[in-house]
Length: 311
Picture 1: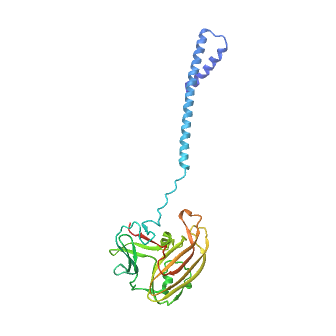
Picture 2: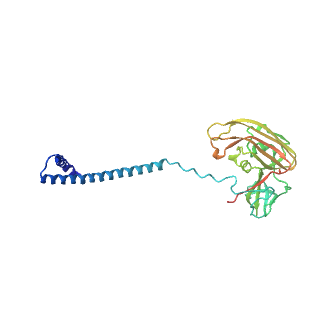
Picture 3: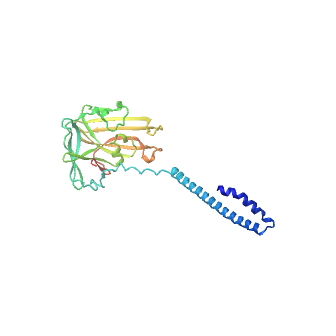
């Protein structure tokens, strides 16, 4: 390039003389200068083309990097449905679909023996090899606690003020379980819940999900040694949000339970719900009402849900 810069003024002078009459020798020099000019210009054009190509390549690389930086991050894959994980449901009757675990016992846990490191239970039914569920709760439960202690042992935690509980025959023996354990060879393989909603029958057994408003009901098994009753009614106002933004709501909880000696069934209904608009993808909600009442037998619309504890 330095050589070109030196000879370029000379070429301009020679070419500038083309307007005057020239000798043959001068004309040869001028022709040679014109050819050299054309060659140089071609060389300059090639360099310019190369320079522009390099600039274009740099722009393409810059745009590619920019696109990689600003392109949207793919959404995470939705978590596995926790309500159906390791879960079987019954058909329109009392038979679990796709049951292949063989015969199993349905038992009611009532205590834990720390010396033997063993759960104590009584058998109240079976799951047959074909998945058919047969319940016949006739065995007595030997260890019970006074019904007046229910306020401190209520698994649903839906009463905020324990003073609203009222008891009849408060010293009578009492035990409530919202599920039955499924055993084979003296080893638990799962639990059995009964209701009309897979969500409710799981949420009301899970400490972090107790307040969800997925509507439906769950049945609980109760054994008492004498006739007794639990009554409670509470209207509560408070913040049920878990998003950081206050969600002030009202909830109503009612207990209207009168037990006969022996085995009883309690129906816990979740009625109405408050939605969480800021987290719909997490299926968040909070209940409006919990209503606990007695039922004489398992309702016709009930579904049996077996949830395996084996993975």
